Length: 139
Image (cartoon, rainbow, N blue to C red; front, side, top):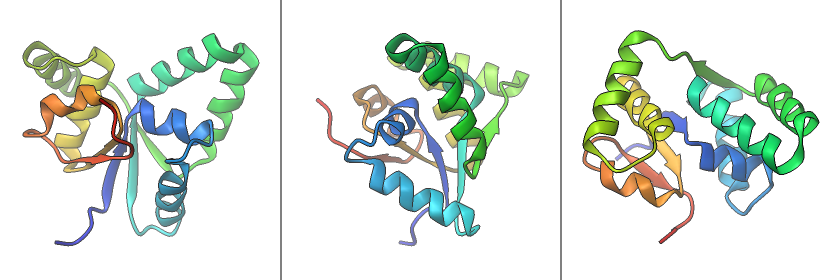
């Protein structure tokens, strides 16, 4: 089976990348491939907001602004929360035990036929809906 060429980053993946955690090497490789147009990376606007509030809580406004500036330079397509995506995410949230922000990841993964990049165990409940690449096993 060929490797997926469309990926959506859950907040977990991007936070770990920004903090240079062990999974950063996998994200770095995908960013390199996306820069060469060998794959496509997506990030929900909702998850971008989630990443920014987490970063601000941990390190302050300047750190969050730095993270946003970096993300804007990366070859990642930010997917807006349009009506169709909001309704799809609401339906997913209503039927699966995961956060509302994470339901946007799943909705976009389905829309774009993209593989979800995460290590967040909440995504175990949706593995029948979308493909998940586990960056790190979390119990």
